[in-house]
Length: 100
Image 1 (spheres, one colour):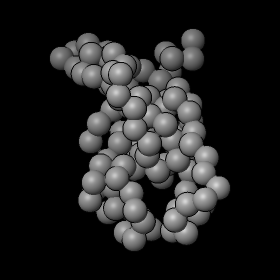
Image 2: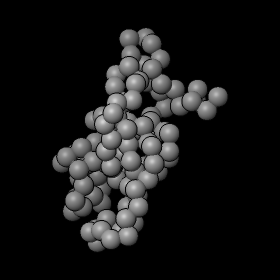
Image 3: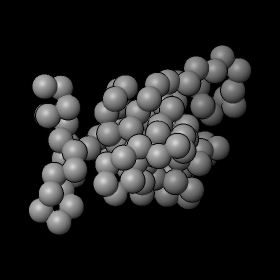
């Protein structure tokens, strides 16, 4: 899994029929220090994440292990919305502090 920040949504009126009704998010990847990386990825949203939230992204066959995604052509899926991240007793991210 990878940590990422939701930057926006991707809308497509023409797509594979199995993707109808699937919310697609534009994600910017985040490193272990909490810095955004210059890498972006599109992922299916399975948890209802919103713009500026930090999320966990599952890739490859793991993204298709989610109930309902088994037959969808997905490479990545948002599987969790992050509340906090601590690394070696240091707070890297807190959703609560983000909105202060």
